[in-house]
Length: 391
Image (cartoon, rainbow, N blue to C red; front, side):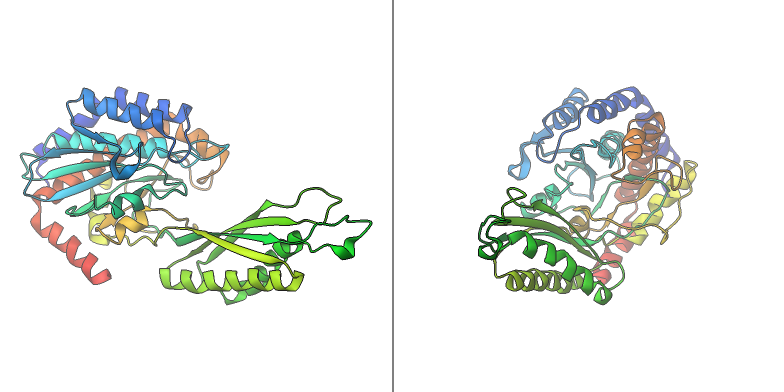
């Protein structure tokens, strides 16, 4: 159990920063920035940290909007707290990353008050481009998670859930090349790249009966042709492929590619394929999640352990969970079934007082959990053992 004095210290630290954290959340929410463009958000966070006497390293992993900050004593356990702050095109912070950033900063500032006395270190990772850019993956590749004993963040949702799956995913673009011709005068001279593109969707739909539960394949046409009276010489479509495990992702990815190649063959058009690196599935560390859940309960927000009634997306926190024991709990900023991520109502909720209140509760729970990991060697050993067995 965590000492009551430590609990009071970290809770009081979050309360003392309430106004600053609320301002940070609102500023980020009102100024949405897309992946790798989060100049204002990263700047505001780093300015707040510096104002509190924290040494901040900017531009880590060759990303201008990524940063790290450390507090505590080297030689003991090292606990990572992650912040996200990128937005979505058109609908802004409809995933609530402004709240994720706020909670991460609050938890780090609070845990920094006790880390040295507990004999360990807390590390704040400012991770850009979760929405399709994989900032955390780049940080992993740069070795920044080496020596981290456990990592955590929270995500806004419509319910409180300790451990929710996140799907492994990848993005694939198929570009078709045909032959242009007048669609009315000489359609026989054309080879329609658009037909190849559309047939890809139809063939993939025919394969869904062979997908395991949890697989999601969805796409859109990036380029549908040049004019209505021209047989489309060029067309392209992009697909997101998701599955519960990396093995199933590999299998389904191959099916999707076969469909695209078959569609190209049927229309006698060329095809080129490009793939954008996606994310791994989330391996929720239940020992760590339950410790976080106990602190949430003590704060008056008893969460469910899991909830199979709601679907899953993908996150680069999944990649982190493959290299470090990790949690990614989901906490409500709206009532259940009112709105979910990537919806306009959810964007509104991310800017609400309720959203900020949830971020502050998450900050306290993460600060408590990080502190407990620093002082409770038995808990940390259990967390690590579970992670090793899960691998």
